[in-house]
Image: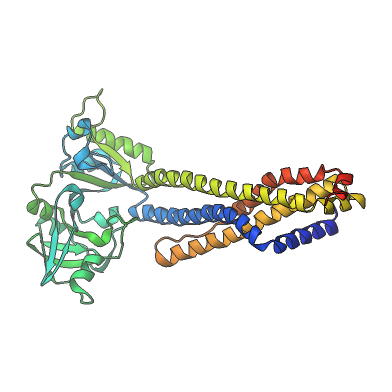
Length: 418
């Protein structure tokens, strides 16, 4: 087919669509829904992937954690083998540091929070904030977990930790609720009834997908936390490794050190969990896997409905234009020319639906960025090309039978058709 013939067939296809605007619009609706759902969800997932990657980087690419239980486990629903494990101890941090040369910095973490069944309250004057997370850690905490960055004031020192000073660094959300626009540094607050001097405020961080973030934290020296919370037995360790040490070698050192500290028999499994800061990636991959499957099903249904609609319209079009087909065959058009003409019409319809679906997907991405600035949703070149390809493929697959049927019509019968 020459370029002139291609342009002529395209013009005929557009004229046909314009002549049946309502019918064509309803036919394209399924294509629009299918493509827009794929593009919209892909844009959101792309944005969330960026968000998760950034958060993992801020947690620390060389940061690792140790706990009696794994991340995300419900303390009230632990399996029997985990529930029977001994708690880690605050002193384990220093012991691991001595036994594992690959460890650069390490801290024990004591946490009192609503998700472990412990209520907290912070007061200043007549203002009160509940459901905060109170955590005790060493002075190196912000270097171990860079997500916690002091924006105002300062971090407490090792000397303040050693003497159990009642000082605290609070999240920006807590600071805004208690002090508004006033400077919190130097003010005295009550944390579960105990007085603390605010010496710093963390940079704002609202959390991940509605979960707790730095904004909800009150960080105090570890020894101070132990003195005021003797009932909190669950202890975690957080540590970083030297840059010139392979992560696998460092993990082996820490594992061996903990087995020695906890006197685990050589033929028994570990009675602790060791995990890295990329646990968010694993959690996110599980979640997005389900989302991708659901989106694929929805978009497939939409494209199937749109494809069946295109096939139906094309069959009707073949019937309505039987005499036209006969005339074209009589003046020299080949069966291949007829087939190409109707295929092009089907692809044109689905491509128009695909372009409208792309526009809707871009609108969804823009809306998500506007409503949730922390999620940089965007439509990648790959998914743009995928949307165009899916719509074109739908037109080819569902338009071939009507096009082939038109190409096989007997010219003589067509000319006699009324």
